[in-house]
Image (cartoon, rainbow over all chains, first blue to last red; front, side, top):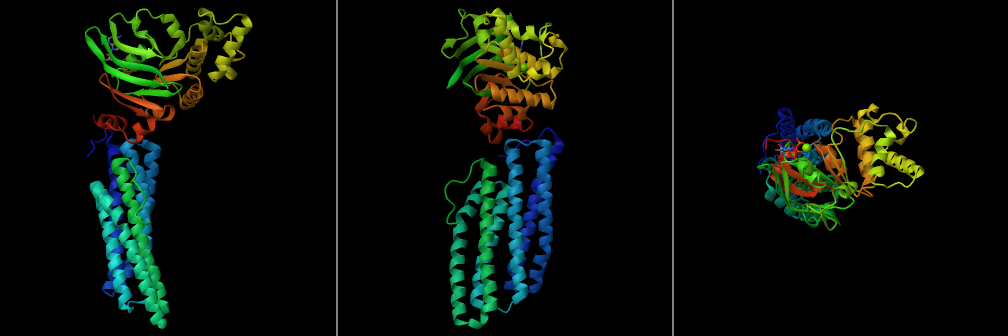
Length: 226
Length: 251
Ligand SMILES: Nc1ncnc2c1ncn2[C@@H]1O[C@H](COP(=O)(O)OP(=O)(O)OP(=O)(O)O)[C@@H](O)[C@H]1O
Ligand SMILES: [Mg+2]
């Protein structure tokens, strides 16, 4: 359902700016996450460093969005779809900020332990990481295109990342049992694996918000696992 | 519980139709807000509920409007009794050019409600207290009502309306000429009154409708387009026209 424009042009522009800022922030976070994962895939620490650096911009976007939202509520008193647009932007921006933060955290751990890591674990990390990236990408698309089905798909497939994470962590512990000398690296990798799962959770939060934005209803039922 | 049930109400001014098949259930001891663009028929509908359209010669009301089980749109109806039961507050405060006391005592006097001077004093005091005006006027009850400020005059009119203990109060843009403080006082009063009284309020302020009412009806071009719980109307209305109107979009 595409909405007609507001009679007051400046209001229309402010709401558009809010949506644009979310999309820009989301694109930045996606790039951060991609750099974080590619840093391991390509064994290129500079990519991790870039992700850490870019998190500053993500944080700035979050503050900017919060200011826009407070202004809209105070000065425009948005109603109905506009109210959902405004409130959802606030929540989505905070989930995006968390995703950026988790990507940064992974990158920081990577800069500590370097890229010379047990292959069996990093392979698992890459697969889960790419899956999480896909989820983030899909949920941002669902926001941009107001695609309810895409949001629902993201919501439904979070379970896969959760299961992957469980088995990845078990595998990492098994590796550790056989290779006690890897303890430093594997401990960091365990946190990194867990962070991927949490990124998936935030993508799921965003999916719920997008669904609410479009329909005004809450996604039914329990979250798959969670 | 439904207090007023309107069914297929059609209203004509001469040959021009102003309301089309309006059906609405107004719940008892709740606030129902009526919103919609200028000229959509809100005041016309409100006037059906206390037969104020009778005073407009060319106006003709068809359909059924029942209060409890009494048919309001009947020739046999005792209109004076009805207006005792259904009070009205207008956009512009319209106190009589009489004292504050007389303004409030007027209704109880013509309806023969008070048996003694003491009883009348009591009714006046209680009505002014309920209207949150007592403290401001208790020492000047014999001053002329039209000498009060706009917000005070409006509360005086509300005191006048409630002095006969009506079951329903109709308000047609009661706050449009008031500042935010006087508006808040009236809204507080509405919250308080709804414990005992059924209130129907017409307002052009979306935020006021959202604040004071439990149900909201959206009128457009003489039709009731959407009617439902106020939070639903303002968070996620079913009808696109409703949404366009409340969000300020081109309709
Ligand atoms: N006394 C009258 N004689 C002729 N037509 C009238 C009369 N009162 C209202 N109308 C017409 O009936 C329609 C509905 O008017 P009404 O006053 O009920 O609208 P409203 O929704 O209360 O508008 P507003 O928000 O401007 O007060 C309008 O087209 C108006 O011109
Ligand atoms: Mg009117």
